[in-house]
Length: 163
Image (cartoon, rainbow, N blue to C red; front, side, top):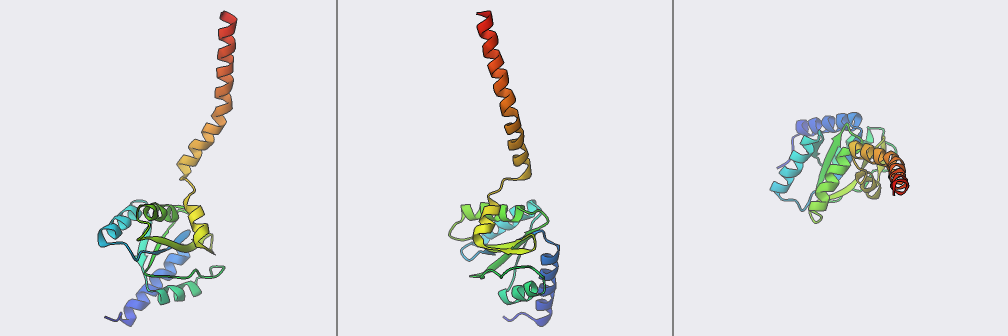
């Protein structure tokens, strides 16, 4: 059943505003996902404050043409899903989490990061960056490590002095 011109215009305006407002966008091929897995993906993304929409490739290309994003558009293979949000890394990370669960059904095709098109490999690299809280914990651990070793050394010296 063909989509009406009005629905296409609504979809185009929705995508234009998403590309303009989002900090990060991930293009996803969801060809092998069943309905239940797709619903789980949508719920997980919504929980993290990430919007997800399915769009026609032609309408997506039209919206991207007017968006002012630098670089070349990634190739859209299969069905196209678009995850976007205000967090720089969360869309890529959450989609990548599902891609690990369903490698045959979900695939990152590329994305937009800092108003530039990114390839699949670059989006996968962004997806592997831990969340900010984890990075802060890692930083504190690095700072704490020399102090902890110094305390252990002092403890050993104190044991030798008392023995």
